[in-house]
Image 1: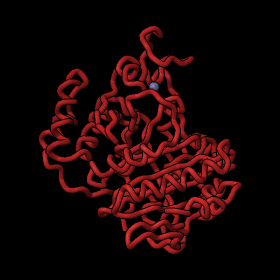
Image 2: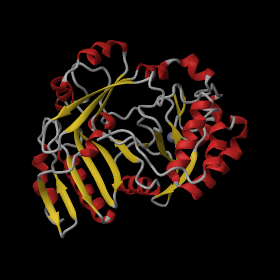
Image 3: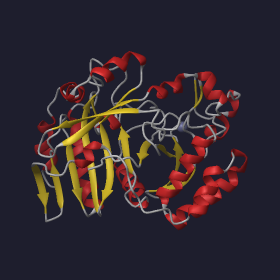
Image 4: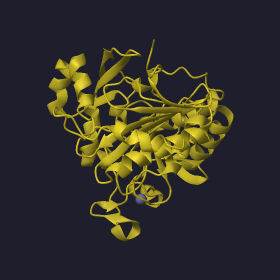
Length: 367
Ligand SMILES: [Zn+2]
């Protein structure tokens, strides 16, 4: 079984795809118009792939994640009810995001007079406010999309973890915090891509920008999505299921064909977890649509257990979904020497101090 390579239907509008891919930044307005048309003719997934290729070609994306020389990966099969392969990624190019001179050269960041920016910080203006992006990120092109009746913008991640890795940004400036509406926005995006993209959310456990809400989207299938059989916790009718898959980290999977029912049940679980200890409890989420089923993966997180002893940066939703990214030079040895037991430990180290089962009883009352 191949866990990573998506094989969507061929693009229904290949000439338009090529036109976007090859377009220079000077044709920005034409690119945005072509993306809207490509989305109409071939679907959101293809519009996003074309935009990502354009942003790689023009240098905004700092390296090409589709180039096998850029990323190294090891896989470790974890036995369980469903044997899944956890993935350990060596992505040293991701450190380029800290190279200020390179960011300026590639048009990822530009110095702008502070009075022109909104929601100012010590280093400029909020990086995710659309008005600031237009000034501060001259090479970035955003794809507009309405999700949950709200305007959003999708931009290629300039230091990606996977090919076609996007940041999904509500136009409104509001802090990174879980809200039920995010679940609907995530499912709508996954659905608009024909299920080829999944959407991830980091609460205050791994998110690097906290001032402006955002999600991630990628068309790379992640290991956790291969979990199928799972001990059932709750079932409603013959459709909605809440289960606890056998995984190195506590995890809840809510799935069914009715998006409203999945969102309602998922929101209940997430809120119960947060209520139990508002200062410490957070979450990583993954939303996908697979063969007409809405799947919500909830990883309850503890803000005092953000990473494993061997790792530098906090672990976020890609890591908890089974793709563990190492990029810092000090982590190279870990990548080279890791075995299945160690990779498993990297995840189990994130297990919250408070057992997530403790909130299940009250949360499931009245589903
Ligand atoms: Zn903002």
